[in-house]
Image (cartoon, rainbow, N blue to C red; front, side, top):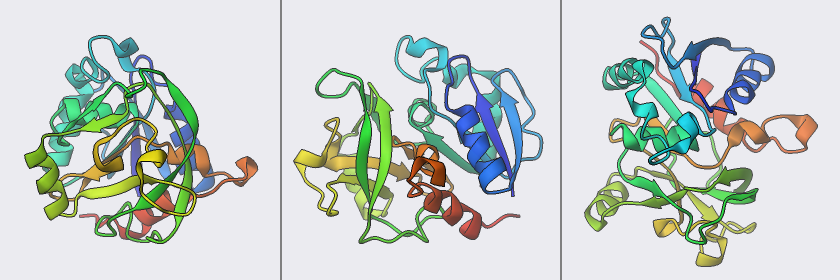
Length: 231
């Protein structure tokens, strides 16, 4: 599979993603610059974490106007795969590729720590090979990670099985004490109705190397490799 990793001014997790895909998983990777208008024939686009354009206005609000995003949107609308991680998730909601919004954490503080994550749907390439009874230990690092959407949207996400991840405790229990940022229903990741666009706040690329003594995130990338249907 050929991946494209987009770099915006302020991205800081792009090389982490490239390392995991290229060095650990031995996949082809194209580095895509925010001013590019050619996605170079990639199958799967990743929008990485960071602080695109300094997070001015709202996180992701300026990045959605980058030239590359016109191509990312076109790719997604044609059935191509897109994953947004942290700031990438914020950009996807700002661009309308995913529903809802990421608001300031309820404690108004930047949070950087390991949390636990529970898979709540296996009906996606990102989650199909994951264990629904396992609590995956994945880092978060964000100031605006509180997922919010209207009651009607949340109802639709639930009905369509579009909620992919929820914050949980180390035993896999989804409860308010395990919610690090106040996200509605502990939501940590979702997908679109067509199940080809994924967004998540936690950073699986930071938990994909045995040298870090945590490879829980690698399971998500392996699920992508095993389950994406390419044209």
